[in-house]
Image (cartoon, rainbow, N blue to C red; front, side, top):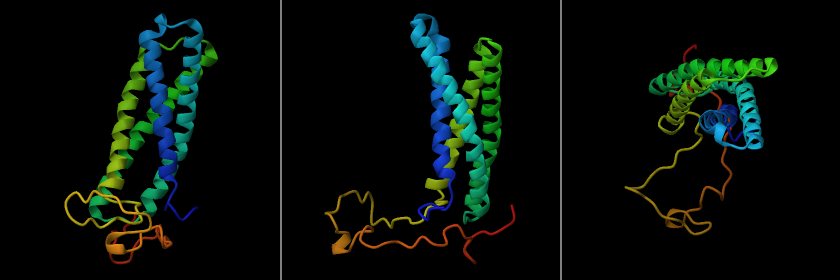
Length: 198
């Protein structure tokens, strides 16, 4: 695994959120405005929506697996563990729902049946759960710093300005001037972290 990230969960999760969100949006558009669209466009949108749903559900299996690996290996303390567990629980409710909806879609296509408003309603519920799960995942990273290799030290309120090329504060070199050592990012710290069995 590349040293730039401690685990692959952040890589796959973006595909899950993007593909499933696009699928949901397209199915909603088709349900609400499909009768007003030209038949050729309607067929294309339905095909794109299905493939986004199916690929998104498939990648979600990988995303959840990578998430479990991250859950059990990323260094964390007690507050971040609680946030991480909350994110995991939301994911475990959301992923099976989307996988079930994808299977529902596949069966309907196989049997030549039309998806109705119940399907779109289920997708909308799953999408709300997905966005809630993604929000909690963002909290885990950006509020609690899990999986982050380095946090910058702010120097005062705002601290919004740009530096010239190759210059940091008071002529110090920027982070791009020296390579950083990321080894050991996937190890639990001794003494500082909150190590326990999951």
